Amino acid sequence: MSDLINQRRRRFFGAAAATVATAQLNFSALANAQSIVAGTSSATAAGFTGIKQIDAGVLNIGYAEVGPANGQPVILLHGWPYDIHSFVDVASLLAAAGHRVIIPHLRGHGSTRFLSADALRNAQQSAVAQDIIALMDALRIPSAVIAGFDWGARTACIMAALWPERCKALVSVSGYLMTNLAAAKKPLPPKAEFDWWYQFYFTTERGVEGYTKYRREFAELIWKTASPKWQFDAATFNRSAASFDNPDYVAIVIHNYRWRLGLADGERKYDALELRLAGLPVIGIPTITMEGDANGAPFLPPTLYRDKFSGKYEHRNLTGGIGHNLPQEAPQAFADAVLAVTKL
Image (tube, rainbow, N blue to C red; front, side, top):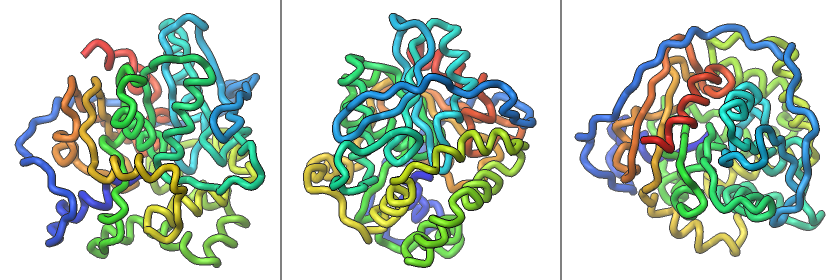
């Protein structure tokens, strides 16, 4: 799960020393409330078939592709602990609307592999975003609508901030997500720290051993706590959990959360990008942010990040028991946002 939250929660809970100043909270977001009843998710329908592979940057990336090859590209980015099947229904809806839809496995997931056995299993934010730019280059996609949640939303926000010319528009669940390492080192109030319990578990060798052994049980726990009203079946979970068998999965997850706390180094080649991200740059492309009313993961009210979007903007609140895995729980609403964002 992603985190401009670490910095912003200091303000939200009234902590004294925020390291990142933001504009006055006098913006009124366009809250288009949509009521969607949380229901049962079943994997009786086929998942993605015919996963493609392509060398892109430091990776050989596995990805699903649906829709016409000449359609306007949309790239859908999954979160943790999820995989590309969070978008299996969304992708079908977008393909039916004429879009070329690309859904990549992020590094450490599914069939994506590092090209070099010696490469650092690095999950710092700019590296993951650079992976998707490299994928676009490999697929000869000049620009695309970028949409995601959790790690995928963070990656999408970073792409929109650093490479706006490659991003036609943005759909981001839980708003503006970016990590400032200096701010992340400062302690949060107890309730906020409690919400991030798993990243502290991951700082220990016990956590590495436990996550290696119980990665599926861990993911199922997060699914249930982050989306408490989502009734998914075993087939739905197991379809995604197969992606966690990637040989680099545990190393990538552990590095991601240790890096966020300043306990693991990134790679120097990304220093310039991280320096730009440390300033929490404003995103200027058309954007729709979304939030479900039953998100059990940490998130912020949209007024606390409204000033980070300077272009055409809309926020959509979903009601009806929608949790953290919004694209899979409310695929029609997510697809509608993707279709609408270029028309703002």
